[in-house]
Amino acid sequence: MLGDWTPADVRAPGMDFAERLSLWLNAFDAIGLQAAHQSIRAIRTAAPARPPDARPRHAQSVDEDFQQVRSTLANAIARDPVATAAAEAGYSAYRRRHLELQRQMEQMIGPLRDHVRQTLSRVSPRLRQLAALDAVLEQVVAPREQTVLPTAAALLERRFAQLRQGDVAGWLDVFVTDWRQALLAELDLRLEPVAGLIEALGNELKNRQ
Image (cartoon, rainbow, N blue to C red; front, top):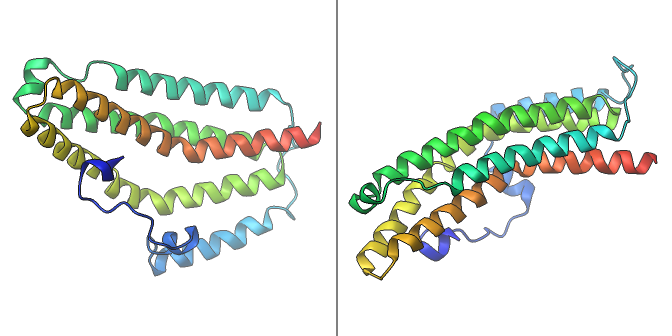
């Protein structure tokens, strides 16, 4: 999407996931991941702190929480971002609103992800391992995300200028549509790890039926 609007190179680099992820990590991250991996492997052999809880309602509950968070944030994105006069004056109002919505995503998705991990940890040793791995990866990847994701606002500024200079009828409406699509794409990107955890929980409970 961004590549269609700007000269930014968003093509896949031809490496698999592990190779691309390695570019985000330094030596200290690698050491921390190695230690975490050893601790996670030990979870399956350790005595459980509490009896496993495999009630199907857990999957439904966390899925409802997921849908509520996504709906709340999607509705915030759908609202009129800024007044028309301010929008026509320049991009700054959109930048402020964009960064505000990103903060809302962080504030709502972080606790949701932690809640889902806690739910998984109560179901089985295998899901406890997955929850522990997700927690470690979140810590490792978060600094990179905090550096990369805010640049979307700058790329959208280029899109704003491109449409404005083109002087096409209704250019502002076109921009607002693109702006919302980009934010919705970012919302789904941020929610992907949570969706993966919920899917793993559903599969685990389904296999037990």
